[in-house]
Image (cartoon, rainbow, N blue to C red; front, side):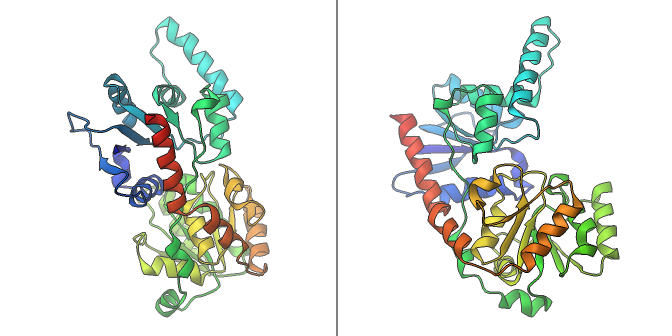
Length: 341
């Protein structure tokens, strides 16, 4: 089976969850069953049985349309979340349709995602919340949609705290890992909560040299318990060690679907504090502290509660049983076979 992977060009600059999802899914296929090639916009021919598109948006819609015109089957992981309800999205699309008939040419991001999902043969959200937005917001028929979770690498389960502790002489701290300069990650609220948190806080991730990034760095410089570390390579032993060395891992994001870094940290033994938005409860169940990302008080209370909570392997075992990349790739391969049958 020849499968072409398609993703937005932006993933080359942002080493985030979409890139990890695509690369790790491909890495864990049985190479005798699936041959993956990475499609770029310069290719004139698509010698594949199907394409798997990661992220529905303006950058990927054109190749989805082209593949459809060529009769190539399409699997789409839309990576879609909105703070708007499914009902609101549905109303927006209905209004857009009426306006379109008048001829204004106005088209929302929702409209683009809807078209991408309509063309695809199968749509694979990562969470039940994303499924709800796709079915009840974008109006995609439920039979076409199947939840395929994000995954995590087993190697984090054996991470050691020693490397990080030897380099930074900090342990049992609160840790954030991610695109710290992205407003969606909401690091600024974590920094605002820092004075009320009963622990050192380590933020691994780079800030952009914009107004938001500069404000975050100013707050961090004035905080007595915050350490900033530039982004680490995902394969870095130091990153895995940081997960193992911390007491609590925090993702205060506006939403996560579901936050691969939090799963990595949980495998390394960390307690988890995470946003309540984006389908995180699908993965972490009752084994994490959930926050309102807009509330400094909510973040402070959840972290301090997590810091005094005894560590347990229950979440670690839950993730190993359900969310390793081996399992995710097997589920994805079964979807491919269904689409091609």
